[in-house]
Image 1 (tube, rainbow, N blue to C red):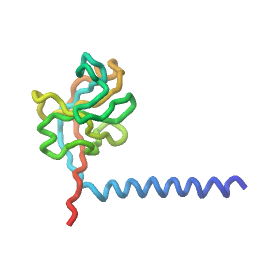
Image 2: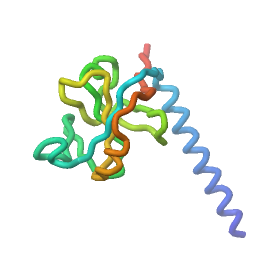
Image 3: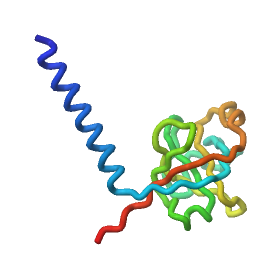
Length: 137
């Protein structure tokens, strides 16, 4: 009896999750590039006096999949809320912050308040894939 309820629920969950993924793939052209990646935390000594607010005005909370990008990458299409896949990381990150003007071809991965994880990450050259909205005609 329980399986009659459970199976349709699981089927619907799978159907809707697959449909969402298909829609995301359909609305973006995906581009890949190499960048230097560092990590940061939402702590005043690493950012400014209001470390929980990004340069775009978004709120930071540990556990969110956010990145900051160097300003040259903004011009290449990595604008506010751009989805980004980072090689070696699960899921999709969103561009929610921008870095100081001195940085070029760089992303900063948000790691909440875990300073140890950010330090262990260090600085690496990695591949990212980002979504640019397809032009509608």
